[in-house]
Image (cartoon, rainbow, N blue to C red; front, side, top):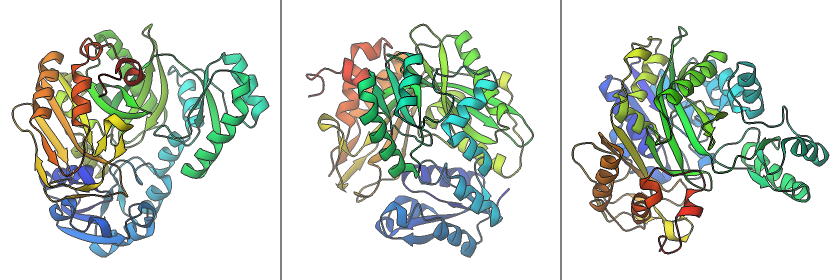
Length: 451
């Protein structure tokens, strides 16, 4: 096991990784920007190193500074968390060259699965159902219109190296293709350094279902069930739950088998998430694989009792999986609400500022992951998510009731939060019946409910 590990991230995920390291008796190093000098993750670590000014590109995305921090502190491993450099093959390769263990899959696997076109091709050949779409990068408008004509409108333009909804456009006819293609390419180039795009058939009213996998260095692969991540605003998830209300035990088995097959097809290592779209007929299709820990991993941990972050570190240290598929139990129901410092009634506009009062809910079946406390400053430079509230109960209705009580008891003053908006989601009749899809907010949250 490692003696010292550097956490190359900030906020709640940095605090979460630090907790796992404490349990494993690993010394920790935090990195921070000048804006985060007093942040909670800095206070919790054994050592801390400033890596630059507040803008992400100068600090949390600065590969040279992070590697230097690991070298000068003697850290043997780096955990990237999620976001930032977590899916950067360049960063993983830099770690490998400096003989620092990257807690995640090898660089070549990150690169392979990060290229959505290559990932689709690989998994199609492995027999995993894939959303119908172009077999390669689309080169120009003429080719795009030909592919769309074969697929049938509507179609989606997607960035080949994309994620988080960036570069996505929905096209309903040939006339929209030219301007939308140019806009999507420009957006993708600015965000990912590549303007490569591809097309997928647009599936109306799908659910977003993802499956957590763990794979060790000896070829052992297991899945930890599915998460329903359909409640989204502009492709950004707001609420996740497991198990999905739409997934039967037989469908869960088939989803799990497909996810394991996907991981085996690329000789995957460490924790990963295989993402699918589930249509109204119960058919599922692969869309991408996230080669990192997910924001919503706690719901799976609450349901299965498996500490996914600890397993990531163990696998990276060369230990084998002690878990067996047949011994994974899916017990009860878990829901996660991502609490943002944002105004849900006004397009989720960020609400930076200083937290003047902070009271987190507590009790049986309640977990709060956060990097914020009284006096914390919510910066304009970073993602506005300030906490994740996760609730577990034996039934879905029980988990909803517990979440409602937890959010009503949560006090955050000094900034606006999405707590009122989440309460409206939880009280929505369609949500309570489990009738959700990726367009839930615009179709089911009426103006009156949105305030």
